[in-house]
Length: 360
Ligand code: KG4
Ligand code: ZN
Image (cartoon, rainbow, N blue to C red):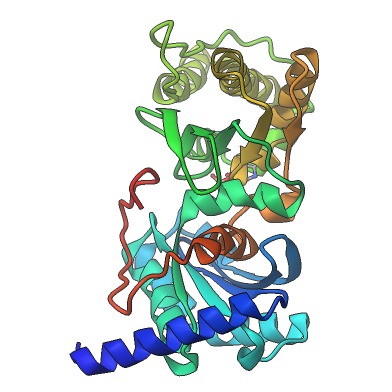
C-alpha cells in the first residue's frame, strides 16, 4: 500500500482516538462478526451496553447439507453484510458518523467468511478515519459475559462452542492463558455428530438438550478424564461409544430409547466439563467463573455448573442465550478493551483461520 496514503490514514485514526479520549463522552463501537454462519453487526456503548445486536443466521440454508458449507457461507455474508450493518445502526439510533471505532472478528473461522467482515470493517474505518480493531472470536465469546456483569479477576472461563472447547485463565483484561483444550472434537461438534446419528437436524445441540430432559441417563458411557493433572478434553471416544451403542442395538434388533441415550451423552459431557472447571477454580484460586460459547445455551450444562459453583462458593456468570451463540455485540465488547489500550489494526488486517488466543 502507498506509504503516504497509509500514514495519512493512521494520522486521522490517531486524531479521532485522541479527540474521543479527551472528550469524556461515551464510546460507541460497531462490532462485526462473520466467522462462521452468522452475519452479525452490533452497536455497544462503553463496552458494556448493547444498543443493537442484529444476527442474520444462515442455519436454515446449511441445514440441508448437515453442516456449514464454506462457499455458501461466504456468499451469504456478502449478500447480508451491508443490510445487517445498516440495521444495527438504525436500531441503535446512531449514524456511522457517531461511531468511534470498528471491531471485527479476524479469526479463527472460515477464511472466506472472515474476509467479508474484515473487508467491510476496513472500508468503514478508512472512510471515516476511525480505529479498526481486530478481535479473536473466542475473546468475543468470553466478553459476552461483560455485557451481563463486570469481570472479577483472576477468573476461569469455560469456552464451549461448535469449534472450540477451552478452559481459559485470565488475570486481567485482554490477557488469556489456555489451561486446557480439546484434543479432538469440540463439545458442540460432538453434540452435532451425535445428533446426526440419531437422525436429528443440524445444528443438533439444542435437539439433544431437549431430548436429554425427556430421558434418564441410564446408558453406560465413558468419561474422558485423561491424565489426572490434565485440563484437556476429548470427546471423540464418547461420540464413538454412542455410535457403537446404536450399531450394536441395531444388530441385535433391539431399540435404544433416544431420550435415554441423549441424557447419558449429555451427562458424560457436562460432568467432565464442569468437574474440570471446578478443579481449575480450586487449583488457581479463581474469583469468578464465566461460561461462554454456543454450548453455553445447554440447559444441562448451565444447571450442573450452577449447582457445583454454588456448592464451591464461587460466583458464576452465564450470558443470556442470545449472547451465547455467535453475535457481534460480544465482538464489540472485547474490542472495547483493545480500544482503551490503543491496540489498533492496520489496513493490512487479514482473516486468520487458525488465529491463536494467546498471541493475537
Ligand atoms: O458458538 P457457536 O454459535 O458457534 C461457534 O463458534 O462454533 O456454537 C454453535 C454450537 C453448535 O455446535 C450447536 O449445536 C451448539 O453450539 N449448541 C448447543 C446448544 N445450543 C447450541 N449444544 C448443546 N446444547 C444446546 N442447547
Ligand atoms: Zn462462536
